[in-house]
Length: 271
Image (cartoon, rainbow, N blue to C red; front, side, top):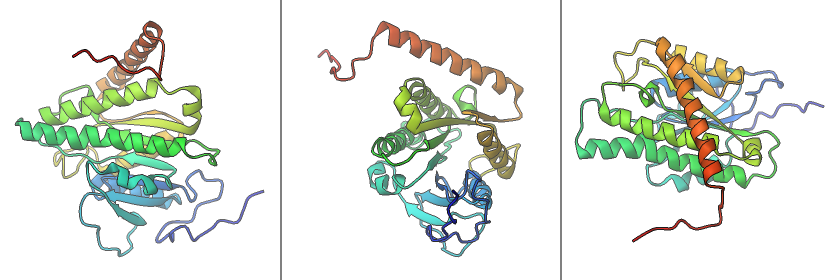
């Protein structure tokens, strides 16, 4: 029997009411990079569908004045301090990792380190923290989800070497994680990878697509049940990304056959 919808979930300010059978109804969604173009577009679309959106931001928390494009709630965080988000992550049904920087033509050690830290390593640590919260969750019958925006730069040039390297790293790490979840883990956690083409934003002022278009397509593909979500005008991406993921899956399978899993064994390090 359906229960009467509760409206006290941190106050659904400016959120369009949705039917109870809507998968987004009172779903708590956290978004990193929520103040950017895509973050705002996703916030708007998800709120319209009845979700409660938590914006995770590095910067100053914006004016709390209600807006349909702004999250219902803001939480501040910093790269390297991902553990401080554990109480927030534990309350989320979906975590969307959408933050990033684009050093463009900069190729210095500093630019490379910053891109790797923000685009890859902080994302990887947040995945780990969210996964830990899922493992400790014994009450949720529905799997929780994590969406990772890795970008087309994972497989092709983006006129920004530091950006490309960092996106390829996190893309491959996510694929490894994806391919090595056991059946029990898959029941509790669903991973979706977002491969997005150039859209108009502060990171890419010459983007071809609008952030609203991309957000709508992402939500539509999620509702279709897709785990590999591709939104781009480039037809090559629709061929090479699935092919790359298939090769990675086969490689992971062969590695597991060659080296049977012994999780409790320590790694031998030669000095």
